[in-house]
Length: 497
Image 1 (cartoon, rainbow, N blue to C red):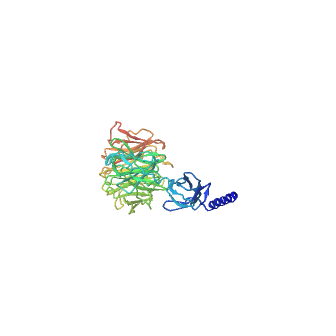
Image 2 (tube, rainbow, N blue to C red):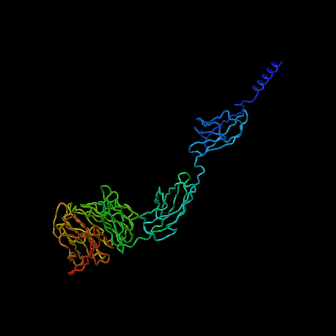
Image 3 (cartoon, helix red, strand yellow):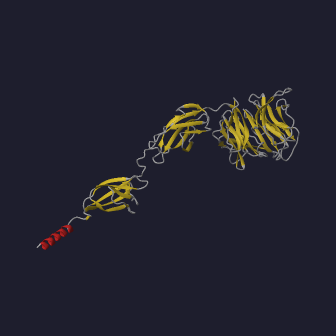
């Protein structure tokens, strides 16, 4: 009887056990399924690490961003999704016996909570500052609450044109910009980036630079093999006007327009350019018909006095071109086929002085023509040796020029004893103004001073390779005193207006 009762009890226990819920070691379990995607575009996130707290098992998402956690004991959990470069996400779930819970994680970039830096505050120069030098140091402040590395960009605009000066990849909050233009009003702004958020801009501040100092003398110096144009102000401060990357020479100033015209080598040609007195606003004037002659460093051109046009030679022809670069017209042709090397237009635009020579630079003459191209006066004709450097006086009564009195002629156009002369058209008398010239030197490229009481010129050794220096001398015939003054060393092609 006891055996039957035992068997019955055992059978009842087995029956109850087979009808109970799924368990592991008598623990009730369920399942967690889910998907991990990126926020916004819902792209699947593969290989995201999925785990729970309290800890159970850990799995990784498949190529569809999906995962499954099986046999999870029934209770409450925090499910974690973690992936490099993405912000870790958590979701709470409750597992019931034989239950299945599905979760979706939308993961953000790990920088999603990163704040943009504060807008830069401009410190220096202060807003509306006037009269700054051409070299300006800009300073500003900026902050980033997340401690990110900041990168700055400085932008500078002006009130004259649409140019934008941009200086990027600045890691400091100070930056110096050199060689701004004289007399410009500038606008500056700073852009900051933390490489995470959108760039942030500062306000726009303004400042202006000092006006270009008054200067009356321009000249040329050699830098890295190129001719470069400089000027001097009344306090003898020197200013570089053209870039050392270009060969620019023979400056000629016009008071009516406050422009300087000059020659520049462009490829194999030489063309006329103009610029402002501070070197800004460069503009090419000639194009189809370049400036040309037997030696380009001897060729000279001239402004019309009103500044509306320029006159220049091209071998045996003379051209006029508008200062705007259009309207090129041939106005004269040398009847003997000689080359026109230099031209100077009179102050009243009524006549022109021409220096002409053969293809070797010799058999030279200087004469005057009127606006109809008729020769009116011959200053000097068909002499031996080099001749040039012509400049008309303001009253049209005198012609200044240089002449090699040695009469020497050679293939390399070397001069042995070039001296300066002033020819009086009314009296037909010639005056030598090189009385005190050192032996073995040449006086070249003369120009009248603005009051015409002096002459500015170049003196150099007659070896043809030594340094050029610019001097001035008084026009005072009959004096025996030394009146030559050294103005600028290692300089040539002076212009004194």
